[in-house]
Image (cartoon, rainbow, N blue to C red; front, side):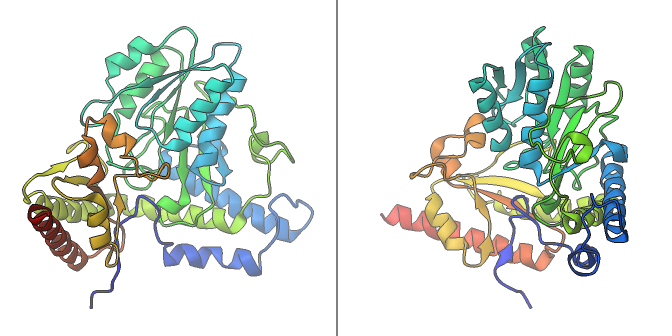
Length: 388
């Protein structure tokens, strides 16, 4: 029996896996110690849970446990990485390279850096949402201290040429930071192979709890140093003070473990469901895929439906299907998505775009229902606009 509404907004957040919940529960009730309490068994048990989770998260991205700093999520990690580098490497330079389609957590942090006297270059993207590597290299100056380019885009699923960016950064002696929130747990990520120096990820994007994330900070070749943005008890090697969210961290570790073991099989299954949904919807007249059709996450598709009112489209669907539109409400009026605009998508098309992000519990029956539902709503709205 099909249960409505159907959730297809896994890029926004994912449900907690029951196995993750199971791991977390004891740390709320019986094992409630503070991981920084070194004088008794409650603290030792909490610290043990944190250390184990550190290993699990590190394994997922090919890092060492000591390189994992726990945060409240990717937004905090992005802030710590960018501001931490800007302050620590001020003697070398003040120039940061990023991209116009980054998440607001990176773009707004870069705007803050500009207010502090930093110089930021915002690289454009091509129509598939991918940066030009030659443009990137040409923009590097002797004052460049950081390249901040996301691994995979949250709206389109487009994956950037991370390995090549890492190699370019290494060649010029510049640090490379990637916000990999959408990629970690969905596609293979290896910080060593990709020559990544700093990376952020978030538990709630990979079937873990909200309010916990991690920042990977490379320890050798080169050893990356950061200026802390939160002062306090010197937790997390002095980089991030604050009592650790032990239940959340334990859950994050389990979520990372599940993703690591199921990565290939899950990616393949989600890719098949996504392709079925995408090819059916693209058979409708005047529909367009946004982003890359090849270099992308397996579970995401972003489609524009021409000759359809965007608000009408969402209203026609949102009782039965949980989706996100390409438009983000940035002010009193609905602004078209800055990501889609950067790809050269016209405003009216950007307004009538939908992001479908499939997840671990999505079924083929649900995909079949969504194909029928979206098709019906689009055809109805087009018929109404012709009558009008």
